[in-house]
Length: 336
Ligand code: EPU
Image (cartoon, rainbow, N blue to C red; front, side, top):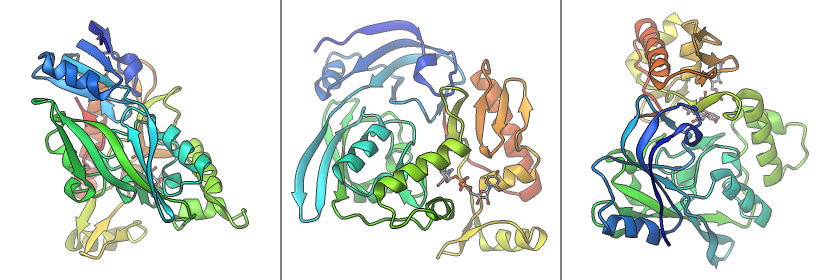
């Protein structure tokens, strides 16, 4: 199919922070053949960026290369294996449309990840997670195309080095374009409702099913998180930090009320939202930037913020947390 290149177009409609920068070149792709054709004809520039939903990116300047807007669609049933189904899903499919599809068809395992913005192809890159589940729990493999050669490569789940908000794809971003993701889901509901906020939301429902889980997650997210349509944002701006035993010990002496989660390797995960709140940043506004009042881990664009202003605001939050707790918060959002 013919693909159309555009020059110097605004990326504002393509990022959920609503930052108004422009891309030197821009192309929309809808099939695997589209991207292979572009590579073969030598259209890939030294700087090439793939975007899906644009929901985990902060643009701080005009993009001087090619932006590939990924709209590769399709959800197909590859096979059934006992009480499991294997689905191949185009990387440009909207993530929540896929979750809705699964719940509608009685395929379970994705429902805790309801209502997360973004696309199927972007989900494994940061290994999206919420309410006790991570996308790596249900991924079997990912098919990608190498930008330099146009060759296809299949990454098995074991090859992806998945961890908390981590995958191999972050090591060399924009080397591969994920074209499809293969998922394994269950036809038997196996609910995972131990995450405290979710358990609490489901308290009133007798024998909840996966649809109830999806609806509960949607209600919590709507209550706690800003709608990017109304307030530009990219979800959690920072990752929750892990600290060593010695730092945890000194902090808990000083702040006995500090929430934390202990892991087997003697690492402690501390909610970044708590650290940010303690430093006085909850609900704070500066110019066109603010932290969200019910979840200060989310930074919002009040309308006309530039990417640089948001980055400065985030850096000042980082500095406060470092000074008070000796913890360096790492951005979860990709800064370009
Ligand atoms: N907290 C505060 N003050 C607040 C809000 C929260 O101190 O104003 C503390 C509380 O102790 C609370 C804890 O932070 O128990 C955790 O809060 P929450 O359950 O909202 O989760 P989170 O750790 O802040 C993570 C993900 C979210 C995901 C939620 C729910 C990261 C970086 N973020 O946030 O993901 O929706 O858990 O599972 O891991 C995203 O990645 O964009 C995102 C929104």
